[in-house]
Image (cartoon, rainbow, N blue to C red):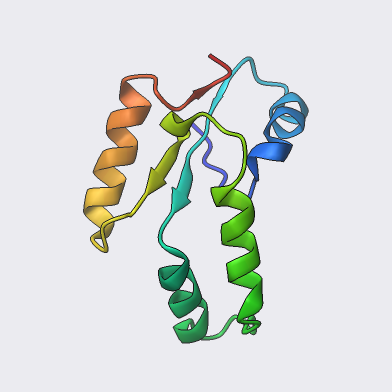
Length: 100
């Protein structure tokens, strides 16, 4: 299994999936609140990215994107283990499989 951890907007998912050469892949959008995104960018150390309007713009793009809601985890818990369990449950039951 290979995990790609990056930013792939739903608008780019078909092209990304095709470029992988795989028959299917698993996709999830982690979408905390916009204020959580802004706060995380503001408090993150060692990355050099501090442009406060950028996470607001990116959040708006993801929140307004046309994507099946089953791929989206919104209003996330701050507990990483809870989020990971939720993702693994959806992975196991096929909810995150793209394309379906």
